[in-house]
Image (cartoon, rainbow, N blue to C red; front, side, top):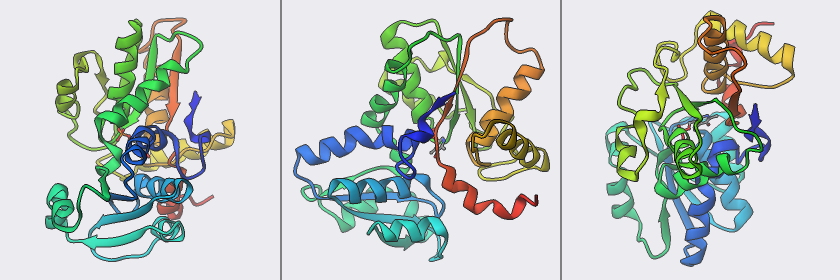
Length: 269
Ligand SMILES: *Cc1c(COP(=O)(O)O)cnc(C)c1O
């Protein structure tokens, strides 16, 4: 397992990889305000809030849905992020929200989940850091940026590795289509579409009990929205003899453990 969850407690895993080059770019343009978007439990919002505080930016976030409080949003505020709640209809058009309320001289647009070409580049660096060559690499997917970035890294290094994506959303068949614009050979990425447990942040009793067992038998924390579904899928495929004997398999822990806070009521031990 590649422990990207150890990168930072809140600028976690793949969110740091996606932000890194965007923040460098903003700095190089002397832009002081980061403007971004997310749902109420977004790991990306918290990562952006923490990174903004650490690297001297102001941060404004448009949060989808009516105004609520939860531990993730409270932590965003602690880091000094300004939260602006917007209804789902206005949220859909992020570029309009940006153009209407901001100017690109002082404000830097960061898409939902950190999705961008620079984010893709940051995720490709996962491959640069590997000391061994693997037959398979597994990662959980929301926007697909991380898995597309890993595929970019594999292409650049001309590795034979197959990268596998576990989409955590339902109906993610076309998740990777738009990444072909960025010269990612998306045909080579293997999507496993049956591990979303009925949709984003949805769970099943099997998933919850798997997570509980995984954590207590390994000492590695995972959560139900992303890494829990990922590990569940890998273990299920192992059980179904999906892999050739002696295959070298790497799983990327993309962090995001604060997601657990939204699911604690489901764990009753
Ligand atoms: C956001 C997130 C993902 C999804 O990454 P994408 O690049 O959007 O596919 C995966 N794992 C965790 C823990 C995340 O927070």
